[in-house]
Image 1 (tube, one colour):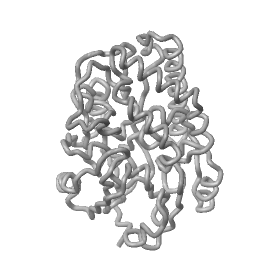
Image 2 (cartoon, rainbow, N blue to C red; image 1 turned 180 degrees about the vertical axis):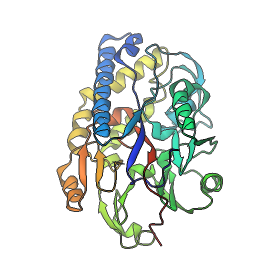
Image 3 (cartoon, one colour; image 1 turned 90 degrees about the vertical axis):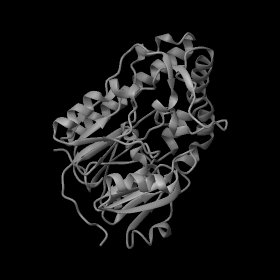
Length: 356
């Protein structure tokens, strides 16, 4: 049976996302735009393969979503994809229905959370062709599977640390989710744990990442953690990550809903996104300047990061961490960091109390 009691115990089984292949983008009519998306798709799979090879070198079993090379155009409500990450743009009260295809299943952390031996997911019916075999595989291990209808709708809100679970009430670019929604999730799936609720703006795994008992890395300074993490060593990564990419993220947010649409609005969005990302230098800038606390732990000593920023890696190494860089060249073009593009569904170890 699969289990996950804590995010830093030894990793055994993980879901790794998948992008569409270059052939998928043959529908794009503008040649230069099509070539750019094909190049991004090819490089993205190369980066996934590097990550997979690294995981396998630590004896981690990898399972991936399924994809097809032909777009499935249909009228569908956009919450079934990753549009939720960017919230409402023009004061909408609900996600729009569009003639679109689904974005690729690149970020399994958006859809799965393993709480001890329970697998909770937020998948919509449209997504099941991508993920049904994964649900079947986990069920075959003897695990119970539950669907959650909470607004939380992503593992990125949740940090599981043994008998303590913390929740971040605000996603990136989104209005805070009511605390009652987190309380609903906790009462359904974690009633026996110490559940703590925070009002920080941002996905929890992109703001704060505990690496082992007594050590965490965060976009915030150590005083924020004195009450709930007394005595913990905090590596503060200030003025980094989202802040450095703010201009790009605002640009992307305006077009994010339309990039997967059929028709002229989709063509326009795809052209502008590819042009801005490549020609305006955002990819190169990100590779040289951004460190992301969105980290995947292999165990208490080994972690995977998506970018090599020597000053921060030195701070991690001084604390005895072995840092493995798995460069994800198009991280902010797609949206997800190393923890986002994975879902850790099985880790060694027992349920521990790290805070008493």
